[in-house]
Image 1: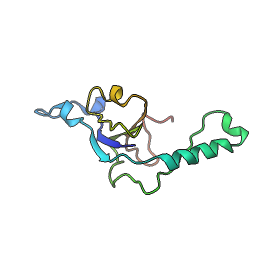
Image 2 (image 1 turned 45 degrees about the vertical axis):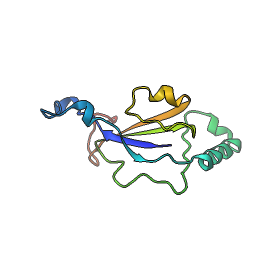
Image 3 (image 1 turned 180 degrees about the vertical axis):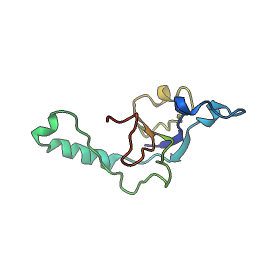
Length: 129
């Protein structure tokens, strides 16, 4: 499970990128964590599902499992950052900057997380009123 981050693109009301800068270069993924083993976390999830109450089958549920001994570096999750996580087999080492990384990885799961700052108690165009 390697982790990558890059700056979020500017919002529509923030204007274009500064003159002389290349949007492609500014939006390249930087690796923030080397691949981590997920075997213990998957075993924990499977054990939870095996003994789950019937209510777990109703609606949408999120199960979270920690990766023992693994953590993202400080500052990896902050406003204005896009975080990318890729769960793949032990034989592939995906690089999100390579156009064919998904084909190379074969079977994988990806998470793409955008982090925005919302003032406390304020209003946000991204949250219901």
